[in-house]
Image 1 (cartoon, rainbow, N blue to C red):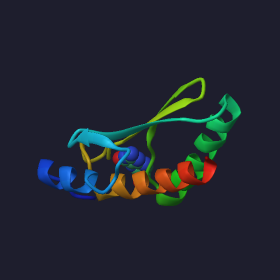
Image 2: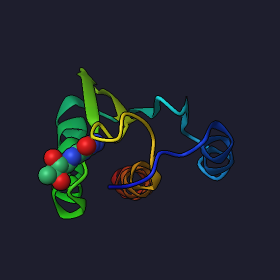
Image 3: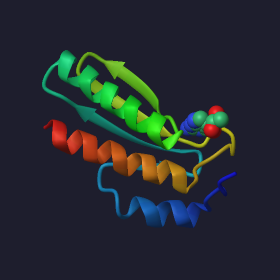
Image 4: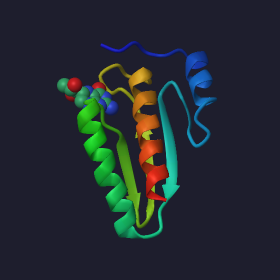
Length: 97
Ligand SMILES: C[C@H](O)[C@H](O)[C@H]1CNC2=NC(N)=NC(=O)C2=N1
């Protein structure tokens, strides 16, 4: 199982991800797309990436605004897997805009 990151390690990793914030309990990013279908298309692509990584974000959908939260449920906190998933989400969002 992946190891929990310390508060300091989470802070360090967040330093490299401009759009994400959080703490050892979870990291999150909110993004607004151009329309509801565009937002759902991003969710669909994130779903495919999550299956590939076998690691899944919590996703809040409000019209065209999405909030992604990454935490390793089985570990009870943030691990490197959450940062790998966050980077994939950033790639997908970047290519959708
Ligand atoms: C068996 C499988 O690896 C686990 O159920 C995975 C699936 N995706 C997961 N995603 C997240 N975010 N946390 C988990 O603990 C988790 N567990």
